[in-house]
Structure formats: C-alpha cells, structure tokens
Length: 251
Image (cartoon, rainbow, N blue to C red; front, side, top):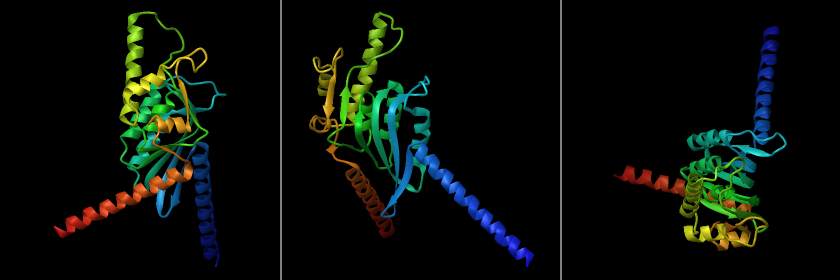
C-alpha cells in the first residue's frame, strides 16, 4: 500500500514540475517579447522589435532596447523548427545601430518560413529596412516611419574617407529597401534627402497611408490582416507540397 502511495506522490511531483516548467517557459516568452500561438492547426511565432536596436555597445539600463544578439539566434531556431510555420514581426522602434538592424533584416529577407511585418506606433530609421524585409509588410494608419540619411554619434573625422564610408553605408540601406519593397532606389533617396520637413535635419516622416502610397509598405492593415496573410501563405505551401508529393507518386 505504501508503494502505491509513494508512486502516486512521485507522479504528482512530476506533474507539478512539468507545470512549473511550462509556466516558466511562458513567462520567459512574454518577458523576451516573443510567443508562439496556434490557429487552425498552424503555429505562428510572434517576435517584437521595440525601442532602440542595440548594437555592439550596451545602452543605458533605462533605455528600452532590442538586442540583436538575442534576435538572431531566435530567427535561426524559427527557420529550423518543424513546428513553427509562420513568423510575425511587430515593430515599434525608433531605430538604432545600422549594422545590427541590417543584420536582422538580411536574415529575415532570406528565410523560407512565411514572414509578415506589422508597424505599430513607429518604424523609424533602421526600422524601415526591418519593416520591408518580410514577405509582406503591413502598417496601421496611425503609425509613422521616419526616413533620413545615416547619422553617427561620437568623434567623426572630417576627412574624405569618412564621407565615403557614410555614402557606402547609405547605399547598402537604399539597395536593400529597393530590393525588398515596391519603391525605387531613386524615390527612396528623394524622400530620404527631403528638406524642410524635419527640424534641424533632412528626411521625411510618412504616416501609414503615405508609406503604402509610396510603395515602401505593401498594405495598410492590422494584426488580423497580417495573421490572415500568414495562414493563407502556410496553407498555400501545404497545398504545393501535397501536389508535389502526388506528382512524385504518379511518376
């Protein structure tokens, strides 16, 4: 009798431990700004890019940041996961480190997993390449996107090499945006270099409708639109895979 009670107690302890692990995992997911949800049998991972994108230097603790060294491994894990079938990127960022932002954007643009981006609040500066890097980009009407030339803080040497470096970095951004959206490189440069709109600066602030009209963002919409697109894309991939398997069987 004591053996049965002991076995029952062990099973209860194991169940409690498993529940605690699930609770910890869920808490960790929310704290890191990522969560995987299931709809119609499809698992879609949601990843948020908020605040300032942190690069090679640690920002002050009071800054809300997205650390690129945390995001990159998550993207690799999502791409290799058998369960996750879609990825939703939610953006509300002021920008940040150019090379860190481009690194994340390049990874997103080369993923086979269906991806969609949704701009809420703001997708400024290096947030623009991040927004256009997904297979479909969405923006809510109240959101804004600031497009401006590359800027650098700290000591800058006033030599031709510095200007050449700035120009090359700017070319990288322009080419990436032009290749991953419906706006041309010339039009993107034009709104980037526009004067008279920003105080003490050059550039352009686009609201949701203007971002779509310019070709920078694909569609005006919200969360439900982005999720519907991902589900349709996942279902389309499943149908294509089934057709390929049937073709192989017939041969």
